Length: 101
Image (cartoon, rainbow, N blue to C red; front, side, top):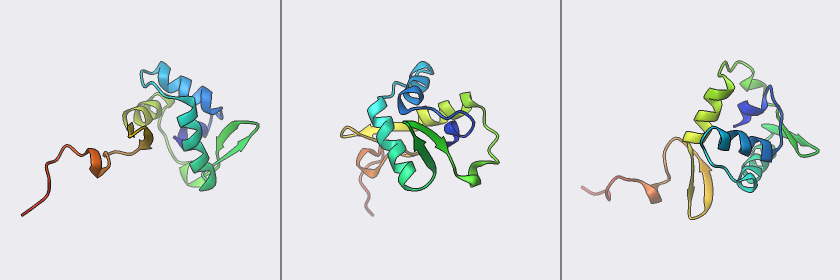
């Protein structure tokens, strides 16, 4: 998500709109919460509601905006109304059966 803000800083609402236009419905308030977490971690900064990626480690990324929107959209999900961004769902929604021996 931070990579989407590297070359094109935007508000949470604009980022949510870009994902929605790409076919991944996204709530701006949920996006705001996710961006707030990235801000606390020092990955993005915010000024006047506009978020910008400030993580220098992400400078070498060569993904297009379309690819990044797909990556974020495809890995976005919710569990009990809480958004998460990951490549695999949390154990509570895993499709695998119960563990055992």
